[in-house]
Length: 620
View 1 (tube, rainbow, N blue to C red):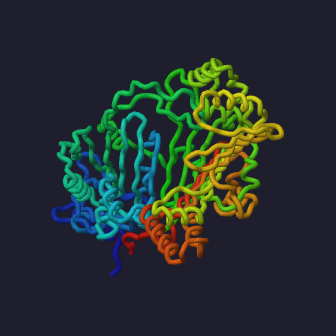
View 2 (view 1 turned 180 degrees about the horizontal axis):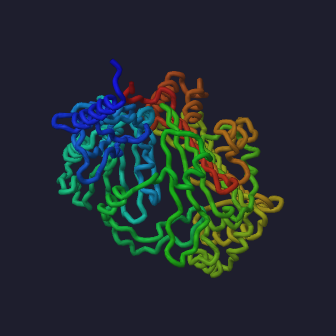
View 3 (view 1 turned 135 degrees about the vertical axis):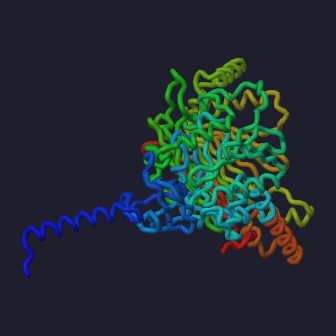
């Protein structure tokens, strides 16, 4: 029987009324959807807030997906301890009412350092960076000495335990570092962690085992009183990182006058104002930190591409200036250090607001261009003459330079004329006389230096130098012979039984101490050193230095025979000396080079250990 329109309307109305009553009546569950936002990326240790904070908001159960117990409340605040992808679910009476996918990534260390930090030394990631650094340290000074030194370093012991024992307290994907705040008189150590309470407890135990007194504070930190009674330290955690604020101890009063006249303007980076040892200042700076911290400091990011990648990095900015204080030329410095089992290299860049050393140039050393090959040590300064004078005698008008000028004037000498006589290049070469050393050792049963030292300085005028030597010779107890040579003089004497010659010519002053370099091939020493250490070291405009103990060992081992020395005694002496050298130091060579570059200056360096140097723990 067909339904009338009126009947249909009544049925629909009745259905809607019954539905409304059913949905709102007692015992019915209503799904309350909760907007958790878009899927997103967050950082470890940084609390994530989800839900509603409004008064009277519906209570929910939260499953954060990381294995921690469910939490109750209208709003969730949760920090993820480890990286990963997590699904957070909001539940109402067992029914899911919202979900969001969070990708958790390690929090970069620089984001955990206040943006006004003056200096930061950091390792961006523990895993893969700590192991080679510790290995090199152990090879350098020995496993036992390294273990003792590292045990005393702040937070380092807990880092080593985490890597060797698989501790879950330290986050291997995050970093470790030290930083200095401009208003704090001390240093702050910072370490990425996964479990704040466990990390605090572990560090506290280490500090107590070292004799320090550790006392919890009402606000969750720990006050650490050093066993020597110095200023208390403060241990605290914040957003996935553990901090240890270490104030400097009081310095002894120094009545002596400080250094007068900065030799080179690139060294003129001094703290501009006194700081205080207030550890709470550090905590406030850290806990009140919002935003990217040091990670987006413009100068740091500008300098970072100028150096290579490394295991450890160093950044320091220009100091804050007091009111009325003139800005210096240095903007900041950035460096990376790359560590391998037997080799450490340094790559740094110094940024400046104007050309350093007045932008002037200086010639390379003539000694480097033509001399005996194979030195065991070398050094060169190639800087403008006035800058070289600053380095030796102080800046013009400084008390140090004025005293020097007045003292020489009293002796009838023109100091300024002497300074102008310098061309700007100074070099030194040191050679080892292996046959002479071994012969003397076998004969006298004690080691005595044997070799040759060459020191050479370029001159623009010879007369001021000769007048200085004449003045120094008067009343001197040193006996010497002097003879005239074309354009200058030659002085000869003996020091500690070794012959010494000083040749003053129209363009060069050269000192030769030790035995003549007979039989040694000659050539371009600077070129050979550049080929070994790289770059343009020992060239024009460079301040370079190197020491080569590997060559010294090689020259000792190369002596297969010596006239007048029995073969067995020679072999015995070589074995004894080799053992002494290996026990003394595992170093093979060291090198450092400073040179001007566009926008500042570049610093390069390396430290190399001999092959098969004593190894410490094998890292897995």
